[in-house]
Image (cartoon, rainbow, N blue to C red; front, side):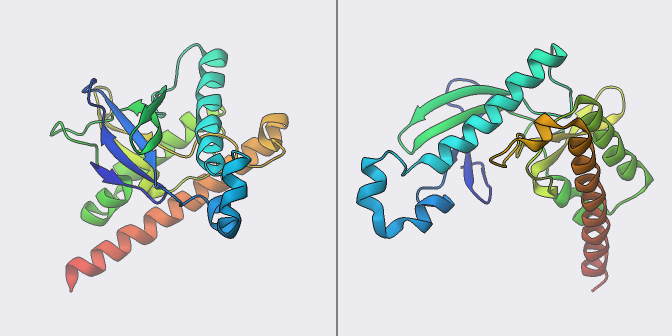
Length: 209
């Protein structure tokens, strides 16, 4: 793997240098853990990989919805190309966001710990928030490790959300109610900025000691 997430491992796509393949960790879905003692029944009912499949469907649905509604994806969202079978189970093929060195773009959390939070970085976060809000991107999480810092010809750098798009709740309240969606996104963005400030402060403290 090129990178490890909390739920999935990220691999280079063997046939496309501009794409990655995300594969879920085996046995890590909540449904699998909760029903582990009934594993034979979950296999018979086809539920063993439901958590993984539901997550893939959620992400694909949101990307398709954004493309249909906007005509193209906003530049604050990494594209998803589809599903692929792997020897580790189903995988999802996503756009590879690279940094200036040609490798994977660093996460916002890593950059904040190394460089701190200055006015330019704060503006990048606010600009990404405006992009997400204006495009009405539905989110199920917004964390520092789900955002990467990529080169940008206009602003020098931009933030790109690489994970956790799509509504997670059983009843799609955000999709049905625009007001609730905007309120939810605004709350997530405030929390993200607070986390950014705390992470940057912690990084400065570590460098001092």
